[in-house]
Length: 270
Image: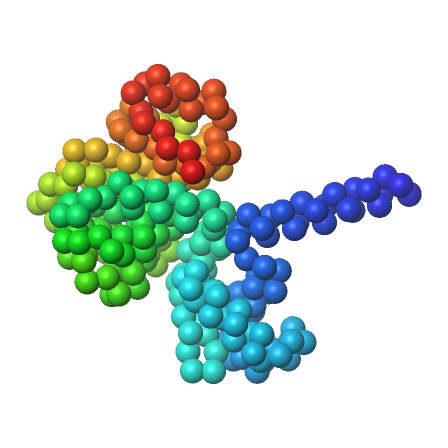
């Protein structure tokens, strides 16, 4: 009996920790699930299901909208993006925002940069507020809400085929248009990375976009939380030595950090 109870308590603690890592409260998780999975969108319906006041639900919706997970509508909310994108946005929220904030700090006034599609890389644009005269080239539609409120950004959104599952523009047209630009910094993401396997992804067309961005930039900066280390996607993107800098969180093993630094890669831990 003791072991069963103890195991249950550990499981509850694990679940609580998991929610903290996502950056959402337990009720926010439930609200988001109702909107994205059950198509329940009105404040009154959500309030009734969860047994809390409409004021409380409105506050939760505002919080979720601030995190970019939903779009507020009159009397309720709707999913901001494809369910797959929304699910990735819910994971490791705090880490992704710290990584994005650090990445934005590397951008100077008057810079030309590229930002690849991804739930971490797109947040970089959020933290460019206050920077002036930034030339931004991107394949990501996730960045649009942040660009709209920032007069200091001059956005070139390349053409191509739209992929809702990644909120990205890909294909021959995207590659052709990217090849026309030269930038100082290219911020790229990954589905997995390691010293041996380099950067990998599950989308072939996404790999081609990252390769092109890297070839058009003076420096290539990988933005990836530590959970991505050791994962391997379907397609090889770049060798690890082809990136110049890595911004990640403190979950990455210190031995791996030292190895990367020994290869000449500048590593920022946030």
